[in-house]
Length: 491
Ligand SMILES: [Zn+2]
Ligand SMILES: [Zn+2]
Image 1 (cartoon, rainbow, N blue to C red):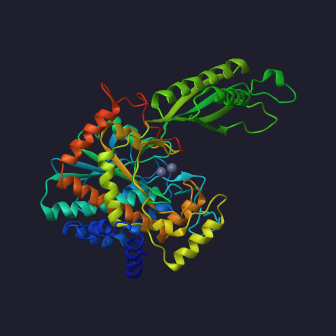
Image 2: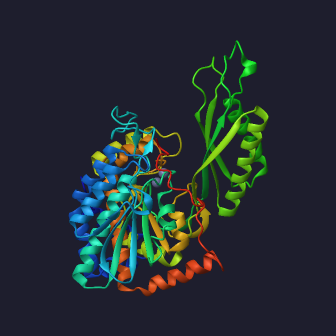
Image 3: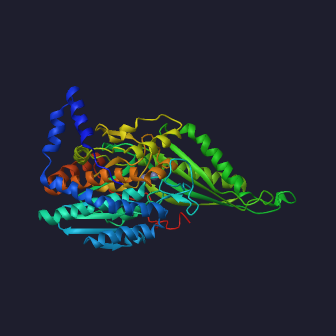
């Protein structure tokens, strides 16, 4: 269900703005100065929203994990093809990666769309913990909304290009396996962004924000130890435990935490630890992530993690092999583009709940451990900031942002206070709360693309900012070296 802002709330806003002396003129001009073409694009997106909400809900139901998103990528391609986009699928050696383009010549504006789910977070669209028996994964990062909302934006921009007769190309990038698979890294490495003038993206969130901020650089890898199996009680001296090696490695890494820069993050899961206590484990595997705001620092930390694995193998008489799984740059903020995105997000406004949605949201909030922000904050646009400060996560959008000026926004698709990667995120993402937030993002993306087509000089300013921020002599090199996409990392 898509719900529009009601007139009384709108009136209350202006009354409050007037009473508190908060620049009502500015708010008013943002709306009255809204061009006819932008108004038309917004109403077109209102018309498209039921269809794209259905697309999102299908992808939510399928909950396909990284590089396995065959149906999800297929559905988005089908949507764009039927709207007249030229679709190139299986790009960068990845079956589920694709590019859908419309128009010709410069400027070329890219909009990103993700669609992979997370393993282990199966959840129904209900406000209490309830797994879906038919799937093991869930859209706990809201990428079903990310892909569908971006596709809706691309369609609205295409229609605007048609009507306005403006020159330029709109490109939708279908980018798989964001969660640890680094789909975009391989797309950047393949040169698929080389001719793009600006890239726009968004992410599901529990609030609305379009600031120029960064994220953490990240390298991950799987460490595999090979030992010798034997009877754990009758012939332990003949065995060499691969699990011992994993434990020794983890112990060393945990001591290492004291001797790394404070803003380093290291986390691991033991993915294989043996099968039975009476068999000395001949094989064990541990999966590591290292993160830091600076890409060079994260490289150093990861090199030291490799040393602990080598030491652990030596000491336990086992053999170690490691596989680099993913490596992404920190996000490069772009003030020139982000300001335009922010203005458009303000024009669009946030998400207002119906009574039914409020009840759902209140129940979700009852399950929170921490603070419970006001539900009304879903309707608020957070103030604009330019900051090098990193939000806790990492994203493979990072690599794109070092080669093309890039700006993103967050839209309130989740109940205020919700953490990404939680069952609460899956639950709200499967309801009208999720699809309403998705349309906020789709609208802000479309208006921003229209601004860039109308005034391509903004792209040049944004490019100059990128060149300045990344410094002299920068040449993009993927952190993945020449490894092929890890198409089986979720198998
Ligand atoms: Zn995520
Ligand atoms: Zn995500």
